[in-house]
Image 1 (cartoon, rainbow, N blue to C red):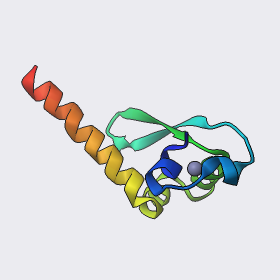
Image 2 (image 1 turned 60 degrees about the vertical axis):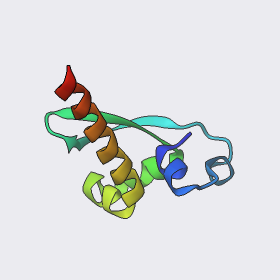
Image 3 (image 1 turned 30 degrees about the vertical axis):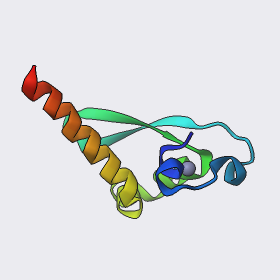
Image 4 (image 1 turned 180 degrees about the vertical axis):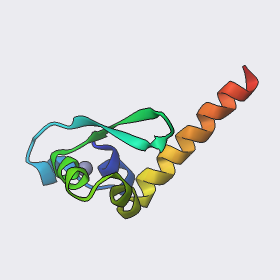
Length: 80
Ligand SMILES: [Zn+2]
């Protein structure tokens, strides 16, 4: 399942004609750490063409979900 399609409720199987998802990495979400995300063929091409910053700008729901993950991770560290 593509993370962007999942967030935006897109039927990725229909759009991608059965091509499987691939794992890409975002390098600017966390400092000094890369974040793996699953992308379908179309979104992987989009990320490659427009770059990470503009990709996150054009997919705010994905950016929000990454931000939510960041917060929950830091909460875990705060209580350990
Ligand atoms: Zn997708």
